[in-house]
Image 1 (cartoon, helix red, strand yellow):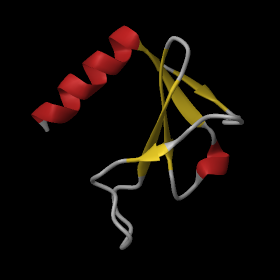
Image 2 (cartoon, one colour):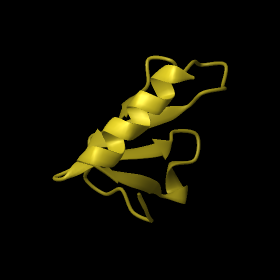
Image 3 (spheres, one colour):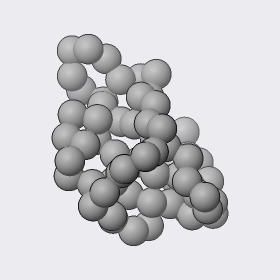
Image 4 (cartoon, helix red, strand yellow):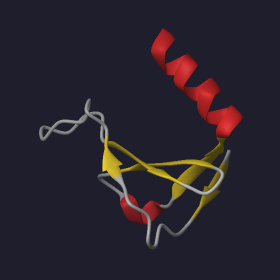
Length: 65
């Protein structure tokens, strides 16, 4: 996983678990070689890039929680 500072030109979509009341505010965008993840309330802070294997491991871990 790498943290990168810019998200120019990406098509972000908000998690269905995000709500207007705050709380879980996560957005994802598909990249050329994996997925990008950021805090939708603070998009200027950058985002995290996960390659395909890391993304699968992340989703598996999140589903168990």
